[in-house]
Every structure is written in C-alpha cells, then in structure tokens.
Length: 466
Ligand code: SF4
Ligand code: SF4
Image (cartoon, rainbow, N blue to C red; front, top):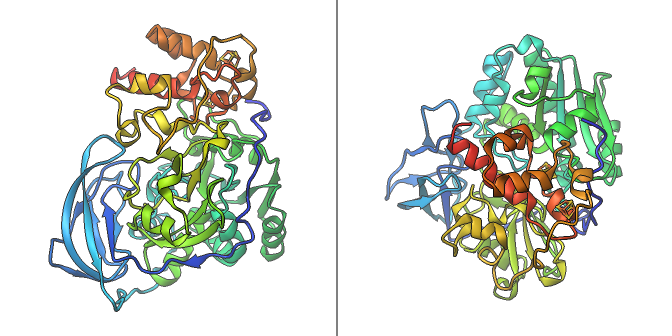
C-alpha cells in the first residue's frame, strides 16, 4: 500500500449547505426484505395487518442478516416477490400509508459491553449506511475483540455530489460523538479516528470543537477519490495495511460509517430502529438539489417528483454516486437503508461511467441484455434514455490505470487475463483485492471497462470457488 494517487474529481457538492428537509408521506411504501449483504428476512406480517412506524416486519435466524422495520404506519396490502441484487428472489412488503402515523412504544436500549452493543446494533436494523450494507452487528461481533484497539469512523464521502454524511456531521455531531464513545466503551477501544476529507472544513471544525476527550481524533484527509474506500481510509487514518484475505479487525481496527455510528447512538438512546434515510438528490439534470429524509421503501419516482425532477427527460438515474452508484431502469425502485443519493444525469457528464452500471451483481442493472459480458463491452442496456459512455478503443499502454489504482493492481493486465479466462493469472494479479472504485475505468483514455471486467472476473472466481 502507498499513499493514494487516486483521481481528483470535481466535487459538485452544491447541496452541502442545504439542510435536510422532510419528504411528505407517500401513499404507499414497498419495503424489501433484503437491504443488506447476506440473507434476506422473512416477512412477519401479511396482507391486511395494520403496522406502526418502527414495527418489526421482517427477520431471519441467519447471523448474516438484519431485521427490517416499517417506516410508516398503515395497512399491509401485499407481500410481493422481487429479484434482489443478489440475483435471488426475495420478498417485499407493500404498505398503504395511514393518515395518522402511530409509532411503536420505543424504549432506550442501554449498552455496557460487546454482547449488548452487538444486540443493539442488530435490533436497530443497521447495516453500513455508507453504501456497503454490511450488517453492523456482525462487524462489531469480532471474536478477538481484545485485539482491537482502534475505531475508524469513515466520514470521507468522497464521491461527487453526495452530501448526506456531511449533513449528518453538521446536523447531528453530538450523536456521532455519542455513538463513537459508546462503541469505544463497550469494546474497550483505546483510540478513535474520524476521517473526513478536507473539502468539508466546517464539519472538521465543528467535530473538533465538540469532542471533549483526547482519544477521539478528527483526521483531515486529502480530497482524492476513493479516499472513503475502507482499506484506503484505514491506511491514511492509522498507517495500518490490510492484506489480502484479512479483515480490518485482524489488524486491530473496526471501521464504521459516520451516519451508521450516529444512528446506533440514537437507537441506544431512544430504542427507535432505522426507518428513514437521508438522501442527496442532485446531478447535472437537477435544478434544485436537496437533502431529504425519506421513509425507507419510498419509490425513487416519488422522491424525484418532490425534488421537481422530470425523470422522463433524464439520460441516467443512479442510486449512489457517479463512480460506484448503480444505474436504475425502474423509477418505482424503492429507497433502501444503504442508499445515500439519487443522481439524475444528462449526457454532458459523459466522463462518469458509474462502474457498477454493468455489474453482474445486480440483475436489475443488466436488464435489457442477455449476457452480462455484452454489458461490460458497453453501457447500452443500463441507462434511462441515451448512451453516455464513449466507444472503447485499444489499450495504448499508458499505465494511467496502474497509477490511480488505490490498491496497487494492474487493471490492464487483469482485463487481459479475464478476456482469456486465465484463472491463475487473475489470482496472481490479485483481482479479489479490487474494490471496484472505478478509478481505472474513469482515467483510461481508451475508455476500457476495466472495473467492470474485474467485477465479472471476481464473480467468475466466486462461482468456481477459487
Ligand atoms: S489506462 Fe487504459 S490505455 Fe492506459 S494502460 Fe490502462 S487500459 Fe491501457
Ligand atoms: S482495479 Fe479495482 S481497485 Fe484498482 S482502480 Fe480499478 S476498480 Fe479501483
């Protein structure tokens, strides 16, 4: 690992000074039973049931799963099948929203040690809110917790446009600090580092002013993409390197997203699970960006309507940032826990390829093509409207992809190995270390879909159990 070269992107953080507004209640919400990495939940309600805000409506016995709660009060009208991003058919609960919103009788959930913290994280319904969707309780349940001495809080928010975490820092700094202290106390962690890119000086200043202990440090990080990638964040905050096959806890570090830790604190204090999510709605097709608090399960269509965006005229709609976001083809898609932005783009932002728009990980984003490899050749199937990405030409061996790769891979060689289906070479070149940041695809003057090929390669190795 070395200091990050990465890429310098225009920040486009036009929404940074816009306080969070509340979305008016939609008429219905559709709440997926799988909103996290791991196993989906079974619905605990059926059509005709009346539910309250915060009520548990889905759960699972699997360790690698996260309970799901209702974001509204209303009546369940249907339990539907849908194809989740895992490729599996899962369930989702459709709720007609009532006029009067009744909330569960929530009680504070004090924590004192690892066991109670893990239980609180699970009951809160939290999975990594930065976008990864990793179950928070699994992360906190590391078996050799005595070896963990460092908590890293990821406040980088390094993708263009998105200011959801930034608003959390400005609007709820006490919850962030409270959450950090609770995690440190329960896990007996000596030091915490809150990593924030230096394009957010207000947030850095505010948190530094608010912190009243000397073992929580705010680290100002260079604004370079992908500063928020977990391994990059750990290296730049602590100097520790996470090797292939290791998780951060193996090196004594637990990493939590900054909104995750504040939501955890709010659950501890109130007992109210995660029901709403803040989203940034922006993009070059959005006249008036907003930060908006949305009930989970609300359709993207409804949120865009509130933001005054005519999505019929947009070229591309992304859930997430322009580098790692997922292009959506159905505006009825519901908002889930780990969504932090809806970006609406027009052709002038050709540079952004959104690395996951052709992912095999999400059947929804390869809609329209029979073969994901066809999708990796170009973006045609994934966009709402016109094609955004220029045509691919031959590699000119400029080495730019190697220079920008944050984990020191050789993307051009990986692409060649994948094209030849050379499994040994893919393993030798350590394709599984790829974090799918998209830097290589972004920088490549030949417009090669390098990051996408890596996703396909990893999927191929996974299927071969290599
Ligand atoms: S950036 Fe593109 S053109 Fe340059 S070496 Fe990498 S793949 Fe080849
Ligand atoms: S090879 Fe992977 S980690 Fe490296 S720049 Fe490309 S997408 Fe990012």
